[in-house]
Image 1 (cartoon, rainbow, N blue to C red):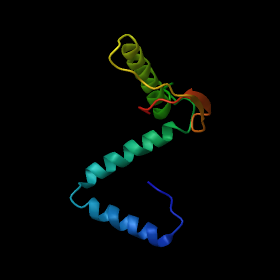
Image 2 (image 1 turned 90 degrees about the vertical axis):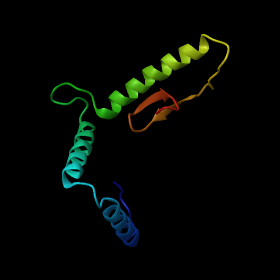
Image 3 (image 1 turned 60 degrees about the horizontal axis):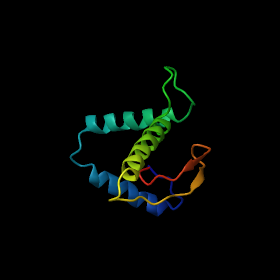
Image 4 (image 1 turned 135 degrees about the vertical axis):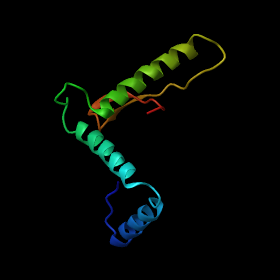
Length: 103
């Protein structure tokens, strides 16, 4: 998905998508659209009706945990090292966070 100011670029992008989806079943396209809508809708609210956090917050939290485990494993030995990254403000999540390459 993209927002483009130039009408000609938008037409070329549309044609590209059209040509690259030849052979992809309508059912698959509809399922993909529903998944994208669900992900998009999850970002609209802090918590969904059933109390689940948004896709992106959940993904951020999971990647943060995995990066922490990786760093602990690397720090426990002498064979490998990982660079130290400074923290920065994430405008999407509106919070200060450590930079983690896996995100």
